[in-house]
Image 1 (tube, rainbow, N blue to C red):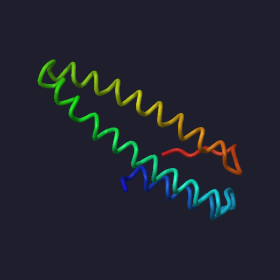
Image 2 (cartoon, rainbow, N blue to C red):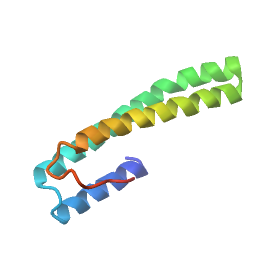
Image 3 (tube, one colour):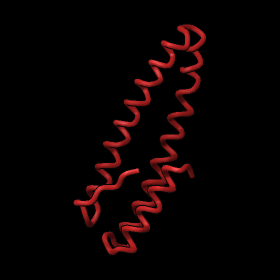
Length: 98
């Protein structure tokens, strides 16, 4: 697990310890965070060959610009997914930041 994933897990444990979420919510959040992290890693792995192709064909600047835009879109999309996931739990007025 990377540092961001570890931060999420620590925050989830803290929320459970403080009574903000119940045990079912904690288990579901942990499962969602693990699934989310796995999916992001798979998407990043899939991006690498296209980046290499662009690097060879278009040069570093163009490849880096494509990568930055792709990463921004991925981050936005995954953030929206996580927001929808969090909205289904017993408390919806808290915010997690990593």
